[in-house]
Amino acid sequence: MKKFSRFIVTLMVVFGLGTPVFFVGAVEQQSPFAEQLMNTAVKTNLILEGTQQNKGTSAENITLENIIGQYIQIALSFVGIVFFILIFYAGILWMISLDVPQRMVDARRTIIHATVGLLITLSAYALVGQVLDIINKTLTQ
Image: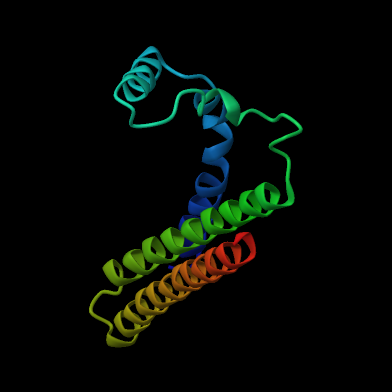
């Protein structure tokens, strides 16, 4: 049973961490539908014109704030992947527990701990974002 659990966890890690690599090319290219949607959004003033074109990697966009923001996005993506793996693993443990109370308790505890960890991480992100916004408003006045 432990070999099966290790196999499942290994599979989740490989697919969880390897999948974004396969979709990088798909994200880089916009589909005709996405371009049409962007044009419609510009025409209806939902977004400012030129916003999409200015997102390139020009020297103006390479700032410390953007670099830190990218690292935070990567870290939050990693936290999401770990959360998914833990929930998936705990679900499998729960399903194969065969009515063994200790295994069910362990699986339930893993789900609770993963959820609490995700909530703490997202709360910290929101709190830091609010504090930085307040500091930014104070400094720009």
